[in-house]
Length: 250
Image (cartoon, rainbow, N blue to C red; front, side, top):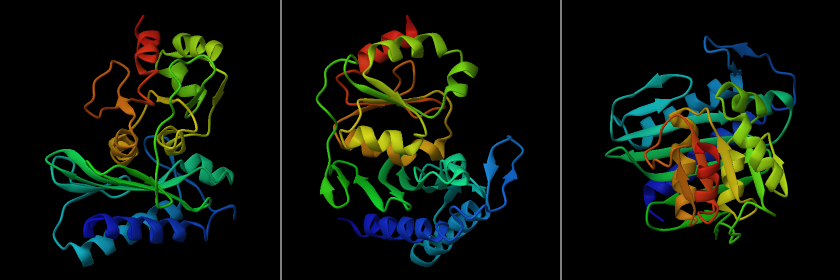
C-alpha cells in the first residue's frame, strides 16, 4: 500500500466517523441552489479532509462537493464528504465518505467508507480492490436474469427518460434495490449485486467508486458505454454490461 493510499484511507475514516455525531439526530437540513440537501455533517467532513490534505500534502489541488475548488486541474484530490445525503438525513446507514486522487485526469486512488456500517473499500490503480482489508471481486453471473440491479432512486430514471428501459431490467432481474448511491457500486465491487445504474451523477460521486469497481474486475461506463467519467454511470460485473447497455440504447 502506498503512503498516499494509506493517508486517503485514514482521512476518509476520520471524516466519515465525524458524521456519526449528527447521524439519526434530526440535524438541520439546508437546501442548496441545485435543490439537493446538505447538512453540517457534510460541511464538517469535507473541511476535515481538506485540513488533513493541507497538512500532509500542502499546495495540492482539491475539488469537493461542498467547497468546490480545482474543477479544471488534472492532478487533484476529489472529495464527496457524504455521498447519499438523503440517506443520511433519513437515518438510513447507506451513505459514504468518498475520497480519490487523480493524476492526469485518471483516478489513481479511490476510497469509499461507510461510517454507519463501518465498511471500508479502497483501490489503487493496477493493484486490485479491497473490502475491509481483504481482496474483493465482482460476481460471475452472466445475465441480468436471476441477478440483482441497484439504482439510486426511481425519480432520476423518470427525469432522465430511462424509465422504460429500466422497467425492462426490473422485469428480468431477480430484484432491484434503491437507497444505493455509492453503496450500489460497492455492492457491485464486492460481488453482492450484478449492477448499479445511475443516470444523474457528479464527478465527486464516481471518481473513487469507478476505480474500485474496475479494480475489482468490473466495468464502469456511462449509459452509452463510454469509459470516460461523465454525468451518468453504470457499474457492473462486466458480464452483464452489454445486456444493460443494449437495454438502455435499443
